[in-house]
Figure (cartoon, rainbow, N blue to C red):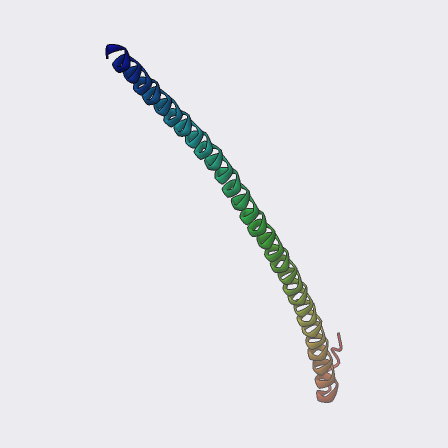
Length: 113
């Protein structure tokens, strides 16, 4: 009877060891799978963040270029307006001088400058 009990005890012990080893192996596979998935997730998130910022930078550069072009156009328009004002001031000065000369001629003064 002791032999039967010893065999049963050995079989039970072997079964428990096999189950423990299988459980440990499953745990290690799960751990490895988790690590791989975590690394894949990290890479995916890094790619998505990089893609997001590339798009954001491209949008910003496009907007910056559009604003620069608009500012250049406004400055060119302002310079043109200032040149027109300068021309008008010169014409006004010429008109004032002509009116002054005509006034002098009408009043009989001989200072025609």
